[in-house]
Each structure stands twice: as structure tokens, then as C-alpha cells.
Length: 385
Ligand SMILES: Nc1nc2c(c(=O)[nH]1)N[C@H]1C(S)=C(S)[C@@H](COP(=O)(O)O)O[C@H]1N2
Ligand SMILES: [Mo]
Image (spheres, rainbow, N blue to C red):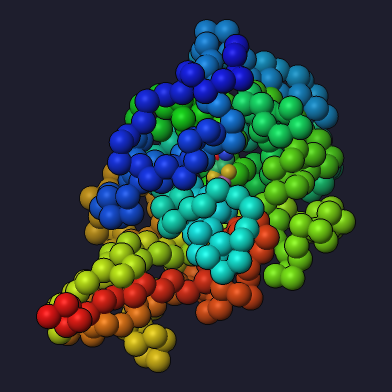
């Protein structure tokens, strides 16, 4: 299996904004993203750290190992047929979503992203908890609180290891069993870019934990030692730079749950809107850990006064599915659009968490978890008259 070159990459939609070609990193146009509550497979953002592996499903085996009583290997056929298949609608968001706004303030290291490193799909496959019980996880019950589930992909990344990360075992064992080993995405087999033939879906956590091209699951007493758990996806004070960060990696926790986030998808920054016309602002919001979005506030005067946006996930033409792990779509209409103006958006979740006003306070050298107030400037048509 040659995972070492970029000659065998899958074909991709032409309307993506490509943030990096090798490895491939791209986001769909935000307006299209916001049109469909469930993102089409070929519009779903792609975040790769290495060439997409070419995998022969017939010989592929997923290995379950570590402290678990019965080490097992499962073929894709067994994953599809030996376990009940569970369907979960879940929004994935990269911790680097909105990174470019952070690098506009001060350089950060990482692929630049606008606000479309986020997408929503219906995933299907066996529950991770069922697979772990098949391998004898009940025998370790006295250790459940201390164990971690380590995932490793087949794509060779930093330190010449497969891309990897881990989640605490309690997340994998949650009763509703929504952490799954997805073999289907929106009713089709997983596209190569999204982890064919099997990937983990960890709803409510940063996208980085939903490991694609999954090769090995290891039950262990410590979190993953992989680069992407230990040396990436962590938060630091704004004053920490690449000269001072070295000793801090081990002391800082790995980000797991997403924070509360939102974006304005219409209008786009610097769009011209006629003064005094009626207008509808549109966007999305999402929080981590399955916390519901409880309110989205919009200001048309730079934050002096606010209007509450309408959320309408329920009225979307959805398959009858639980939307616990999905984003929320919102819109906010005004009869007389002020122009020019700065539109601001901030969301709240059911833990009463909201988004910080000031991006400088949360700036960090990797440019992750930027959930500062969303600001979009509207330009007046008068200037052009
Ligand atoms: N094996 C593997 N899994 C991976 C990655 C990767 O590069 N390799 N990228 C991670 C990151 S950072 C994100 S945000 C999501 C992106 O999933 P997507 O490309 O299906 O949108 O996959 C995660 N899983
Ligand atoms: Mo990510």
C-alpha cells in the first residue's frame, strides 16, 4: 500500500476553496454550506494531514488491542454485519475553523481556514461501545474511569506514525452509543477523503478526534502519545510563542469537546447592501459536548444593541433524526438595513457559555478554537453613487 505520494488522490468538487493542496485541505463555499442542513458528501470540508491512503477493503482489518481481554481483528464485512448498525447525525468541526481571523492579527502556524471547516452528515456503522464489549471491556470495569481509547489511522503523518488521537473511555461507553465506527456517510460508503473504509465519529468533540482510515484501536491507561494529541490541538496564553511553548505541551490538556461557535454565512464581509432595504442575515451555530444552542444574538450597530435570531433546525426538511450533535441554522431579518454597518453575531449554549468579544484574549500560536464574536462589515451603496 503506497501511502507515500499524492498521485492517487480522489477527485474533488471544483468549487472548494483550497487552503492547501498537499496534503489536501479545502472548504466549501459558505453560502452553499448553509443551504443544506445535511452537507452533501462532495461538499463536506476536507482536512487531511497526509496523502489519502489507497485501501483494499477485502484485505483490510481493524485491530482492537491493548489492555482489553480479547484482542480482535474485524473485517469491514464483520463491522457491517456482526454488530447492530447505528445511525448518528453529527456535525464535525475542525478546531482550526476561523483560523485566518487569528492569523490576521498575528501569524499562527497551521492551515488557514475561513468559517467553513465545518459540515454536517448522517453517519452509520457499529457503535464503538458494542465493539469494545465484544472485545471484553467489561472485564476492566474497575478501571473504566482511568482508561483511554487510542485510535490510529493508516495515513503516515508526523513522527512517521499513522495519524492518531484518543478519547476517554467513558465517552466511548456513553449509554446512547453515539460514538461510532462509521462505514457509511449520508447513505453511501465513506468517500476516500472522509476515511474509507472506516472512520471514528466522536460527536461533540473537535474533528481531530474522529480518526479516518482507522487501523488500530488500543485500550490503554494513558491518552494517545500521538503528535496530534500531545503536540497539537492545545491552548496557550497569547504571549506564549514557539520559543517558550516546548515545556508547556505536556502541562496543557488536549482539547476534546468543542466550544460554542457561530458564523455569519450571509452577507459576506465587505458585501454591498443598499441602505434601508430589508435584509435577512443567515448563519450557523454549534456547541460542543451535545450542548444545545439556546440563543443567537445579532447586532447591527457594532454591539450596542442586539436582536435575537430565529433558529429553525426543527423546520428543516430533515429525516426524522435526533439533532443533538448537529449545528443549528439561524436567521435574523431587518426591515431597514443600516448601511454601512458592522453586523456582529454571538451564540449561547445550554451551559450558558457564550463567545468572547475580543479575539486578542484568546489568540494562541496554533490558531485553534477561535470563537470570538463574528464580525461582518457591510458596505453602503451610497459611496458608489
Ligand atoms: N487518519 C486521519 N484522521 C483524521 C485526520 C487526518 O489527517 N488523518 N484529520 C482530522 C481532523 S484535524 C479533522 S478536523 C477531521 C476532518 O474530517 P473530514 O476531512 O472528513 O472533514 O478528521 C480528523 N481525522
Ligand atoms: Mo481539525
